[in-house]
Image 1 (cartoon, rainbow, N blue to C red):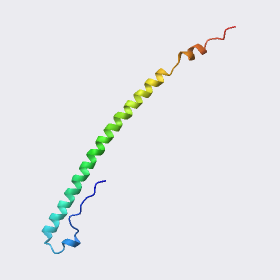
Image 2: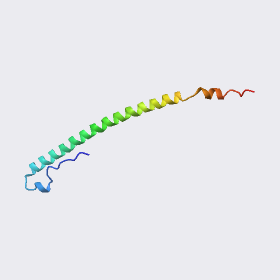
Image 3: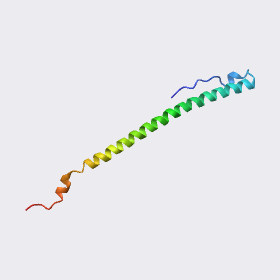
Image 4: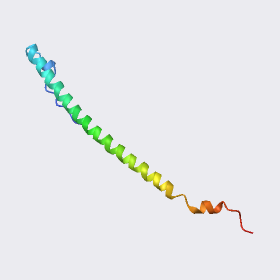
Length: 82
């Protein structure tokens, strides 16, 4: 997970005017939102890739099940020869 640098805590900014403290707070929140948006995009991409891979594997499995139906099964249903 990406670390979010802390610009300043409210305790460290008590000597600043309230407007400046709020500006710093807003900057910090914007930085957090930006990093979370990047993380969200990366996760969405990962979900898309994994969903595509799952679909591919499901299709391969369906094909293998079709191929695994051996003709021997049909032959084994015949009546035994005497």
